[in-house]
Image (cartoon, rainbow, N blue to C red; front, side, top):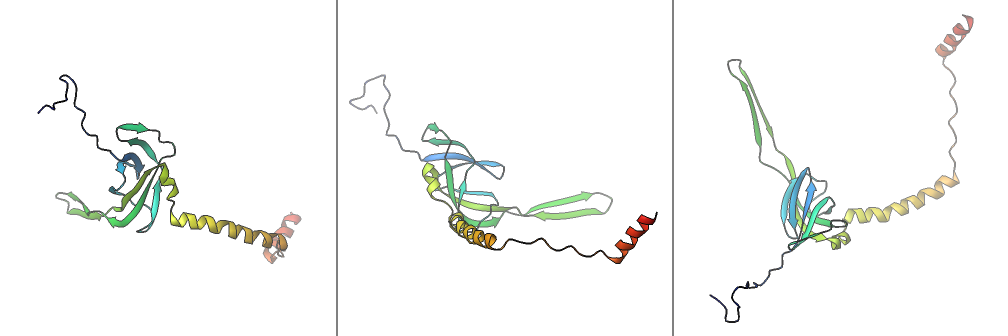
Length: 174
């Protein structure tokens, strides 16, 4: 169907849908294409459910169809759960030698929900890191006056044992 105001030989401009900003991040030796709202399962990361972490190893970033500069781009994600993958069974057998070994392994992984992609993600810092930064100067200030008030003395030398004294005197005689 041709629109009435369409000139033959020209392309129709369809309404463009806005694609969200995406990034390709590297974690656990693998690469993932992520956008805000995505859920991904990655190799185990430190943290508990509800913690917000920052994925700083951004390889590529884009907004719609355009590639952007990755300098300063941070992907922030919320940990949904720490889980284990399906069990992988390793069965070894050598026929006619009565040799059978059965092992199993369940890989641990972390399920993440991507909260934000882009420069504004820097503001969403982890709660624990922010708390640690505020406590560190207070502890350093508390330690400084105590160190200045009482300088430590070197421990006194212990007297030589009888065996050590005997070996010294025998060395002097020879």
